[in-house]
Image (cartoon, rainbow, N blue to C red; front, side, top):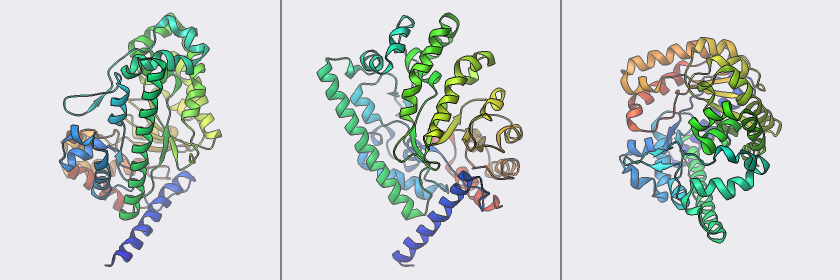
Length: 389
């Protein structure tokens, strides 16, 4: 087959796969269940046999890793995901994201704001983050204003340079291997999660909702405009979605969730949709208690579930929203190939009828021990053949 014919075939395949996801976004039943595998670039680096610590510094090698992801795992979208760009964190001197001895990026619990500082943060969140939180989380910003500006500029340039190279490599590999386009335009955070993750820590926010409930509520409202701004880009659309990982809700009592978490999170999702951005939620841990809340969100939200009963999730939110996730990554690590395929059939049989379903795993694979590559490939190939409407 000539290169021209190969290019033409790949473009046709890419168009067909893009149509699967477009049909889902438009509320139509696609020809078959789309397969959307997420894995961090660190998984692909280990699969490719390169040194993990060195490879995360070698920006020039990212293109090769993206190609490994594109051609290896039978996903309809390139699975390569860059969760954290360590060169940027190194420039900033990050304390909130650090590299372990194994090369994995970890997020230690860290406090960027003290409880007595709520009023100052609420009065001007942008200024407080710039003047107080950033220097506490990033040691290289704890310098004079002039030096801080230089570090900011250097980190920003590195970020956009690297992301530009990644975007170019993604487009190249999609065309070469006949894959659908990336579904993510940018990321935002639920306001309560922003306060918990980067400002007060898990233990800090848990104490604050008892001791300073009105200040927590006011803080969530104060950071909401920032989260809306972060979640809308010029290329945002129904197919280019805003990714929002949901963290704290499963660890909260329902009355606290309803009071502190839900109001500003709902406003965030509604605001993103009003601005023309699609939304992709990573529904972390078990949200069974909150499924009725999720069903109140604007129609067509893509929800990637980590845990829960697929029958209940399908019944509660599957008519209005797009479901993915729920396939246990642990099975891919420990199960036989047939056991993994049997589980895939079980989930497709439950979740695919009526559409609104994209096949994916319950977590993003980070380490090669998280899932056997041969099981990932076997399951994805099975779903692409079996999940035909």
